[in-house]
Image 1 (cartoon, rainbow, N blue to C red):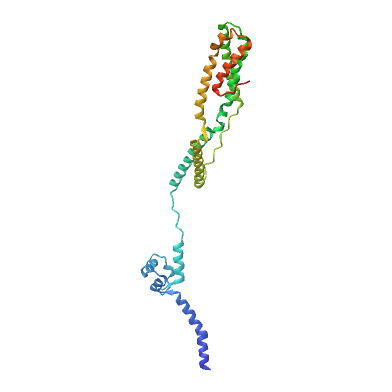
Image 2: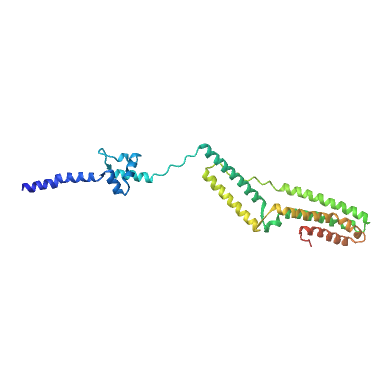
Length: 283
């Protein structure tokens, strides 16, 4: 019974103490043992201790607490790299440059937006001006009863004065047209005092829209108003030269014409001049 009790005592009370001490001992390894168990060289372990990485894992007797050493190594390997510190002056200069680039891109986009039009709407741009020209020049036909049967020189003077009156009428109507159109309010300026990330996103979107509009121009889907104006100016010049020549062309003919014949003659001449502006002839 004494043997049995001693055996129980050893396996029980003393056995538990021994097992606890053994478990603690298993977490403490020599430098060589830790290196071997972790698959690295002992020199590497010593270097990690020397640079402070594993210094706090050393026990009083010079061994390594393997659990603590593993935790320290894991923290070292997964610790995020500190962001690069950019001097404030450089950061400010970069943002000013980005803001200037964005402002320039916005100006370019606004210019394209105000100067681009679809091909289908191109002719409609000058339609109000063409209508004013047609209305003013057709007033010359109303002089037919006055010039019919007059001497050529008298008919010429009357028609020449009528041409001048038509131009004056056109100018007055044109000024009224401009006054009836309220000026377009300026487009609101976007706030550029925003973060660099938001500023870069805005610049990217603006540049993408500029490229899209340039693509539409290249494929003929849209045209520039600046390109339309020279053609219209040329057509107006031809119209004007033909219109002011009407008195000289018809003065001899109306001298021997009736009022109705003079009206037909003048209408044909006026519509011929207006044809250069692609105006449909009135019935």
